[in-house]
Image (cartoon, rainbow, N blue to C red; front, side):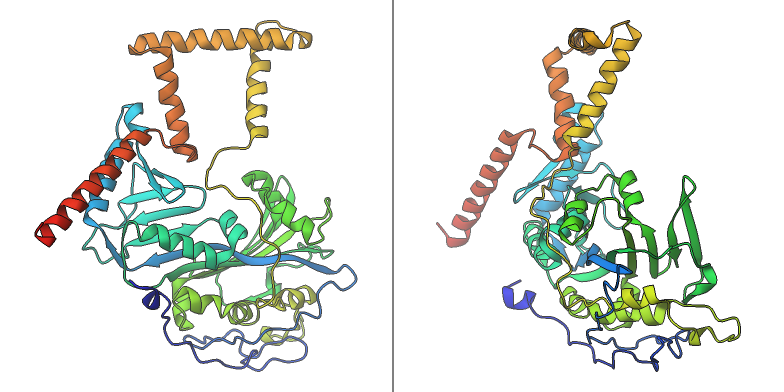
Length: 448
């Protein structure tokens, strides 16, 4: 595909007024609980003037959190043969073979998974992309890809897709620009509002499920419509980070004015392909140019947080909650915050985590064998000597040397963390063989 073909998008959808359905000054939405299947989206930017009033609401950043793309096309025959071979290595019971199940593409070293998924038998993964690939001749897209949140925060969705496209072009022929299979939009914010101060009846929504959650007796958030083609979550992001360990976003919050100690909440909408196609959006370029319309639909038609009025049984007339007015007014045509300066496609744990694990193991050994705290270095040396003896005996039992055992184990970590190509000489030979075959084919074609 040439560059002109790749840049061609489908016709943009027709646009409607920003608050279709009869909005009122109090934020009520007439017809908010009625279906509008196929209704076009507005691309009109909402008003952000109600942000940051007297500490009531402070938006820290808003962007795309998860992005799933599919690419119609066909794998090259030699690519499938190579992937089939690498998958077989990943399924081997020999650690040395498993360590070879890697695929270098560009500056990435992908782990080749031992198992596939429905319609996609080959899966490649590193810290930037999870790429699922189909066999040639199947009706499924050539590639179905998840772009990681950390990489999106580093380069943004447009540049992330450009880089992904260049990698996929090494694997096969892409016949169309990227289709969006799912997109998650979020806003991180600080607010003095108690997120547990309302009950489920305050949510006016088309979804059938509304759930509240708590972690260790602390309220952690709400979910609406989980499992459907569209869903929403309002949750305590800091509590989630404690579990996930994805603390790279803390620096980005601080640049936006977050003070340590402030609770950060996230409102996130997950929109699957069915929702996008109902809005006549499918290609990535179209979706990204209509984020305001998608956010407006999500926060004014599909879901609203209202102030219940027991005297009015028509829920669509209930006034909007002031917090929701702030959230729905996010302007997606404005910059949602700075990009992260550092990113690595590797998936290795941070050194501080390794230090915690290592010291914990040493202290456990010292406690078992009667060392005192003052004998930490002696205890550490004894631990290492004993560990060496244990693994040397294990290597002898396996019929290999200690160095060979450690080489195998390190290779598995390289594959898992995407940190190094375990057998670069094999990749060099493969590339040389490929060049020889291309030269042979060229000579045959030219009659030389």
